[in-house]
Length: 328
Image (cartoon, rainbow, N blue to C red; front, top):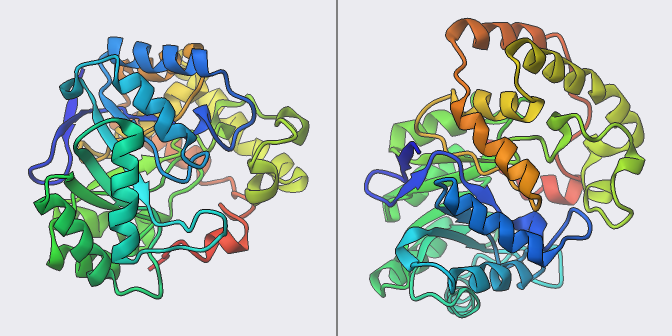
């Protein structure tokens, strides 16, 4: 298993992390028993980097991960969790008080003494980033947190934050259908400051795997139906051109669409650690096999040329969600 370092001096993590959100939240019914099997198998396959958050459930996903952590040696897993949403509303809360409160609650739910990577889930426009990071830095000094990160923050916020305390990681969406960070300065700023970039939804929330062909393929309770415009019926049908192209490119390499999508993200640099999520054993094993896929520069150019012809239709989030994403 290849390992990559979080930030300049943070923990070493497997090159492919595991997003745990869908085990408890957002993507329709989940089987807790199989989710625990997925977590166990992930460690068996050499993975060690788990991603959760207070808001997933809410609380349920941290509780699930906590049950798993009680089974394994603490030093076998690097745990990332997040705070910053105001539970029960669509608002955000980056206040120092909330940073401290959620940290203590997350430690309790996870059953651990130190959070390895503690993210601000979304930047609070009403709280100076210096105040939020200052409180997170105090948690590091107290031994409750090892390293800190941000999610969906823009370049200027990253620079201001890094002046207060080293930032180990920035988590933002990045995949073959979401490439904003290449052009808005986010990825370049991470590299400038020595911040590891953590792509979430590297499989396009499942779309790039080719398993979602119509709206009816999503469970009626699935969060993507109401909160992801790209999955609206008309947008979805337009975006199938992209899924078809990914499938054809993968077929040329003798791999699955998921493996091509993950191998492409992994090939963007060893300072990236994608965290595909799954609640199914078969998908976990398929995803982890992407680590054995090598894409040459010729392959990458071929993929780039093919997908450049296809326009992605729809925003990543509904308007309220996009309002919380810093684009610059």
